[in-house]
Amino acid sequence: MSPPRRAGPNDEDGIPRLLRLRAGGARLYLVADSPAQIRERFPELHVITDRPTWLTDHEHRLLRERMMIDINDTENAFLAALLQQRT
Image (cartoon, rainbow, N blue to C red; front, top):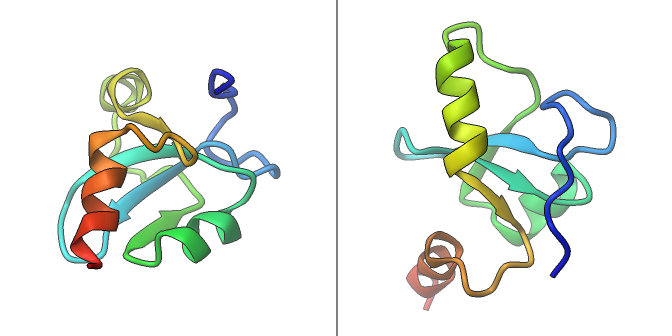
């Protein structure tokens, strides 16, 4: 797996996108080819295309450092848990 590309949250290529669970407050960056790819593979996630105004620079940096996940990372515990909940 190649390392995630470091793009801004508003880049046209859609990588990375800030996400949150529809029913909760978990937030993360998911590296994907497009927002549509995220919605198709993980419909339980809500794709946010603009950085929320409440998200401080510090919180933004921490999210990017600690919660950036490649959509193809099948070993990632968070993505594996989402997929497991479907079965």
